[in-house]
Every structure is written in structure tokens, then in C-alpha cells.
Length: 182
Image (tube, rainbow, N blue to C red; front, side, top):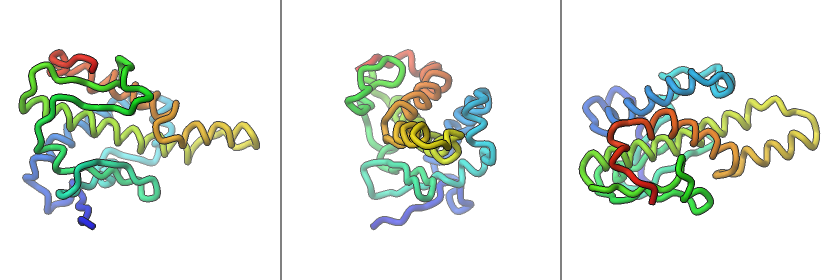
């Protein structure tokens, strides 16, 4: 098993992945703070705490979110590979706000955009998990039904959070103008 390394640890100064992810996290954090419901569910979190929950591995091809530790683990390979498409899960791949993205003219900037989409996707899982833990639906059947909706990895709660982050942060950037829905 490859060791997970905290991306924002002092030993990672100068890591090119760190600078790109930090830009994304700052913009995502600003968007979260602009939304009362999202901010309410992350009330004990700060940008520094969020950064502390981002790790990376250099020998894996995929990225993921680990609910037990609230860790977002990014693949270093995702940053240094060339992509012409960012594929999303089939259940929402064709949605214009959060669907798959095809890069019209693949370039190094598209590689950075791929990473931004990946960060947004994985951080959405972290926020979704916080919703599940902090939900106020604590009475019987309503709570069980609501919790089940929120814990489905790519269910309604994830899609709502991801849509908000993509719409308010990622999809508004200049480089997104060269993207089209896949």
C-alpha cells in the first residue's frame, strides 16, 4: 500500500500539486461560506482544517474520499497525466451542471482543470459526509430515510453539493469556456 502524504504538510512546500489544489480549496471554501446551509454543516471547520484533510499518493490512478477519517486522497498521477475528458458517474454524466466534461483542445491548462474537477468532486463527498453527521433529522423514520439519501455516495445530497460547487466555482472560470459537456 502506498503511503498517504498530507498535501499541506511543511515537507510538501514546492509540490506543484499543492499550489493548484490550494487555489481550488480557497475558492470552494469561499463558496461554502456564501451558503448558510453548507456553512452551518461545517461550523467547526476552517480552511486550514479542510486543507489538513487533503492527502495524496504518487502511485495510484484514482482519487477518493474516506468517510471514517474525513480524508480526501488525491492521486498524483491525476495531475501529471494528459486527459481529453473528465468522466463522471453514469447517473449524472449528462447533467449540464455536474456532468462529464470533454476538453475541446486538450492542453496543460486542461490537465489543471481536470484536477480542479477532481478536487470539487472529492470535497463534495466530504461536505456530504458532514451533512450526514450533523443533520437535524433525528426522529425515527424521517431520520432513517433522510440519512439513507445523504449517505448514498452519489445520491441526491452529493449531487446538490457538487452542483453548487461546480456552478459557483469551477464552471465559472475562464478556462471552462473551452469545455463542452461530454
